[in-house]
Amino acid sequence: MDKVEFSSRSVASPSVPEEWLQLLHSRSYLYEGLVYQDFLKAAVEITKSKIGYFHLFCEEKNTIKLAVWSDAVLPICTTTHTQHYPVKNAGIWADSLRLLQPVIHNDYPRQSSPNGLPEGHFPIIRHLSVPVFHHDQVVGILGVGNSEQPYAQLMGYDLMKFVQQGYVIVEQKISEIVSHRNTRLEIAQTDTVSLLVKMVSCLTGAASLRDEYTSRHSQNVAELSVKIAQQMGLGDAAILGLRLGSLGHDIGKIAIPSEILTKPRELNPAEYQLIKTHVERGAEIFASMDFPWPILEMISQHHERLDGSGYPNGLRSEAIVLEARIIAVADVFDSMASHRPYRYAPGIIKALEELKRGRSIVYDPYVVDALFHFLEEADESFWRLYPNVSFHHHSK
Image 1 (tube, rainbow, N blue to C red):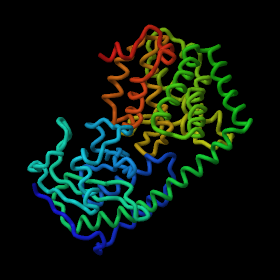
Image 2: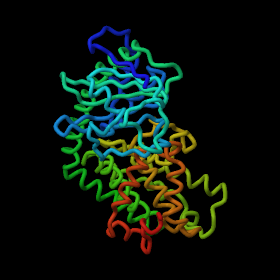
Image 3: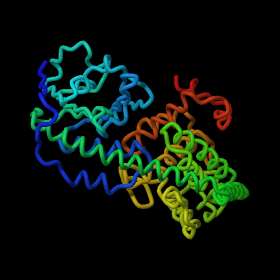
Image 4: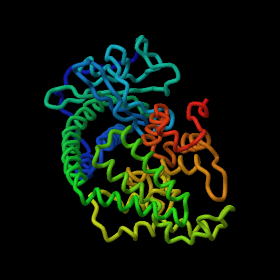
């Protein structure tokens, strides 16, 4: 085992990249997970690492729980945010927590500790972890790994300083999220918003007079989007806004000729290009309305993809609002699990394969994982949306 331990938490360190602290401070966030993602991304880049993780620590239960993995880990490691691990069984993840100081392993394959990595885990060559303190209490562990060069003690001090300064901002952002969540909830509970949700439901229902599939699809996508958001821990007010946006995500199709929407054969290229304009037409319908949620972005961005391959603007990753990323996954699942006028449904198993294949490439991995977790627990009330289909049957 090649392990470097540090004798003090108070050693002076080199300057911390101010631009990352300013970036964290300047951004606004919808829910806690997005704050943690940026916090971890900064640590990974500052240390020139390839992978990273951030775990939250529960002192009362002496357990840790995953908050976020770094982007490079997500394609090869399924995220699990609900399982708590006893610190005594956490192995490498908890080394710095036990010692309350930075810990380095520069030759992890030779690590002889019995608390190593589980079988099949992604390989770790080098590893640096630091405890995260807030008001003199340990609240988590942040770790990075697999840098090209061995981690030096100076790097440990540098990361430690950034983490302590950065977590102050993280806590501020989480407080803002809670405050905004409460404000949105107050707005969401007003009669006006309740009436607005009913109005959009009626609009999507009226669309069934021209295209029964679009109306049913919008209702299904709204239901599935809400389930995903609940799995991800979004607040009630944000979920209400998501329901509204997902109900109206295809409302722009009322501007598309019904003979194209209900065409019993595959669309030709010109017709497909016309169909694609529904996202812009939908945003135009609601453009004059002032919402406490990014409804216009939900509608205009639900066909955008993380790698920039989507439409209409080729947006990438964080430029796409989280709600649109949720609707995108729900939209793909329902589209492939349902019949369309021009083709039979590829089926649920094909939908799941598509989402697995595109996870972290075109679809948000946290959203995909939340969908899969929900489907594993879904009861018959949900599966009635897809008659004669069982997720457990088709996933074996």
